[in-house]
Image (tube, rainbow, N blue to C red; front, side, top):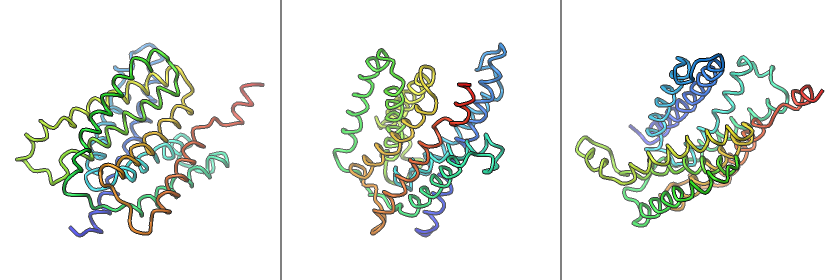
Length: 279
């Protein structure tokens, strides 16, 4: 498969993962609403279907990270909030308030720039310091968990969740940079980064769930989205050899900024609904 086709294929996988995350969010939300009528959320078929969609989306994300830089994959995944917003309004953009319409356009436009700027090639081997730095960082995050949990601040929890999900992406990207074959499966099981994927994933899910319980959904989602795009994106470039196409550095930065600005706008409450609530 040629380089251009590989890039296109990886981008399509990342977009499929974004769609999977959107479907998962919609189904889990429906299951959560039904759970209010007396049944446990874990027994709701819609919620369980959403979890299954999450698993599929995660597998697709892992596949995309084998070929694309962390900043590109994470930025594309952040676009799920735009699709979720559209879905909540019947997939009709004219049902959105003007601010949200422009925000959706910003997210999608930013993602196009990010996708176009990604350099699909990756180094054959990681820098020697990459794995130790990642593992020490993961350990420090886990040490910080009880203190953040005890503080109970939703934004801090959302930030921690973003670092957890970002750490998962970095670990997936860093594991065995060469081609994965049957004979390398044993090496993967012995790679400590594999356990980092699990630990950071659990941390992200738990911290974000706690943040949503105690804080505003929109603000927590914005903090999560910005953190899981910016932090792992920078680390991927600095530590893992992720690269931007020559001459596209400005476009990549602009794309990330525009997309994240749209995400933040979409997580803000509708001013009209707030006004109605006050009156």
